[in-house]
Length: 226
Image (cartoon, rainbow, N blue to C red; front, side, top):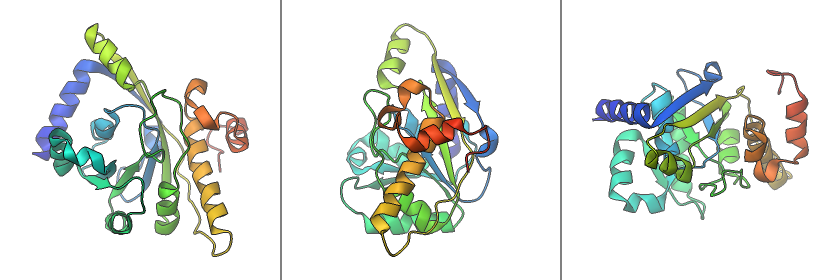
């Protein structure tokens, strides 16, 4: 079933979209890592199965979607992990770390929900905590063109949507210190979000548009972000 779903996803995206992938070489083809991305449309949850030929990617998805029979069906075969976005879900956190320790890659949107405007929302600390706790590389990926209203409008006009995925350089979030832990976690979250923002066009950068760390990243030569 998983192979069939992959083929169907590729067939559907071939009909409805022109997908461009930039920086594919920055995304490991095997092994565990934390792929962090912005989230602007429902199709985002299957986009990575369209672009990357890995069956061991898992995606945390808000538990409300488990009530949707179609999303629940996709989740069963495409490694969705339904989680509580609003309260600490220690069982889910342990499962995510266990999956990565087994060599699986995690795809997570730190914002925790879709941005209705397409611009970045404030990131939540879950992705940074998992990256710091696991020690696995973090790979920022920026998505444009998957906004629900854009996809629907193009479908109505029998026009393909222009979708771009841009992968950035992997980096490491160091272990959180015992002292000033909250401050360090916030700094790690800002680092992740600014790395995503640096890959996005200006109008998508949202609440991070004027962040000092983003300005530092934009001033760096390509590939010199660290």
